[in-house]
Length: 83
Image (spheres, rainbow, N blue to C red):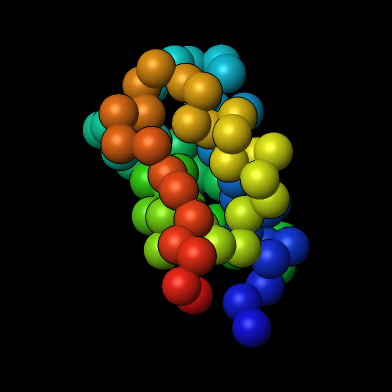
């Protein structure tokens, strides 16, 4: 099973970025922003968002709703019920 703590931790950092900058996590600016994973390793915000998209089924529903509420997220994330 995937580490849902790590995924939710990354989701909260993505929400912080979205709240403060209102840019898509896929933009060039987000590639320059580094965030820490729970183990202390740093990755770009774009990489964190890509990981979140790949493991969207492990994201807390409230966090997912906050991410999708931003206008800069064009393709809204949704959970796959078959996984």
